Amino acid sequence: MPDDFAEYIGNLLLKCEKDNFTENYGNPEVSIVSGGKDIYIVSDLHITQTRNNGKNLPPSDTPKDDAFTNFMKYLTRRTASGRGILIINGDFIDFLRITGLPQTDTDFQEWNHILSKIGISKPVEYLKSSISKKELKYGLNTDDFKSVWKLHIVAKEHFRIFSSLMQWIEKGNKLIIVKGNHDLEFYWSAVRNYMRLALAEQVSGNGSLENVLKNKIFPNLLFVDDSLIIDNKYYIEHGHKYDKYCHSIGGPLLKNKKEINMPFGSFFNRYLLNHIELAYPPFKNVRLKRSILPLLVEKRFFVGIRKLFENIPPLFLVIPMRYYRYLFGRVLMIVLTVFLPLLYAMDKFWNIIEPLTLRLDAENESPSSRQNLLKMPGQSMLENLGLFLVSFIMSRASSYIQLEEPNSLYQYARRKFSENTGYRLITFGHTHNPEAFNLNNQWFVNTGSWIPTVELFASEKKKDNACTFMHLYRGSREGKEAGFLQQWNNDTEQPVLLAALGGELSENETGNRELRIQRHE
Image (cartoon, rainbow, N blue to C red; front, side):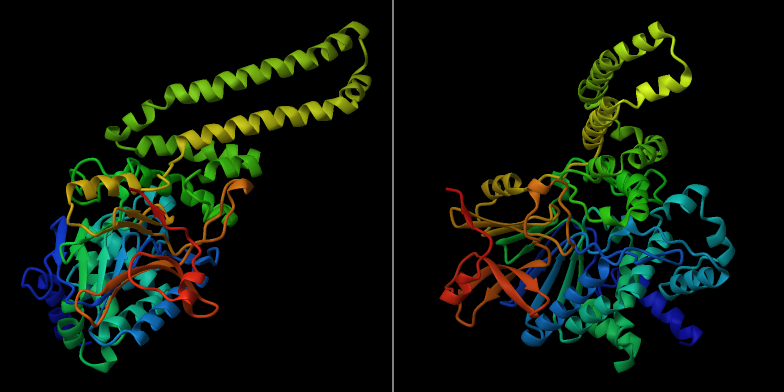
């Protein structure tokens, strides 16, 4: 691309929202008219890096890439040109899990180049000096130009997903990206512009980059800061603001106006969970309802304790003071559930082994015979019992200091229905639990997620409900509409019905139902 044309494209992107080429970002609530188009809603893809500084990460994203790419091909194939709206309702890009850094001069030159393509000038030497020691360990901060690097990593590694989304847009269909708590970086215009450019470059060979941006991307790609209302009756929001650990206190930026104001839970993700997941890949997709820390402590006790003591002190040093009230409320709980039981267990354990030590003193046995006595059959059992008690207590302690996401956001939907009686449907994401509730012919749906999960306890294991989505069908007859909560089966490359929200269904469709619809009068 010639330098003058590259500069033109950069300026075009810089001004696209101000010059009304595309929707201006910033309104917390966005309203659109669907025009009778079919609407598809997904959430919580958590697309992130697959390599970290040259090392392959656990390949859990590969099946997701396959599934979502095939899903997008299916939607694009079955949707008439210009007749579809796809909404990614939060946590599309998992910026919190992206810790890869530019390593070589070539990397920094590449970083400089991608910034210049969206109209940002950052010399290579400045980029090198901008990375702090803390960032070398935990990944880049949330500055706009650093967030662009993270998105660039994802766009390169998950090019199939980006390509499939662009094919959807190229047919004149709309793509709407709602901000979640893992992709708060979409607040930055630089990040939104690089997303526009990364998609446009997927097909720019079919026409000039300028034409693709102006005729395809700008009119058909919409970013939503908080919530979306369609036709004054469908309300769509990610749902993280109802989770106190994932809701930011204050405005979107820190006081320096250079970094994102991250919620309390994001600090746990960045400074603790990332290190645990990198070190122990099997724990990567543990269900956050219960937390990854109890599993680590129970399965790898000594390793878990070491990881906690290595990473928790630095974590408390970086958490802003305004979030400490989240911690103080649990201090008493931790004391009552951890330290007192631990002291009690140690006291009981000592009462058991004390007679053995007294016997040794009384008989004045030699060190060798003393060692033999300590190896008596019961001693091994006592050691195991003590280790079990300490492990159990520490695992419960770690669950108290770990984030616990709400299992359902139904109560918040019910409250919003009471405030907005004209809404026919409210849909959230965030919890990763697909749900469908009928509240007096008003529907609440959670669209689940596209990541596999690992339950903490065997008693909680259930069928994997990943790869779920919602389809709002708009029939040819005026007023005809129906909603379906479905799951994508990548083996058959077809959706499976989980719940029907309205309309007429055939017997074979209802026979595939796997998720019970719950009615609340």
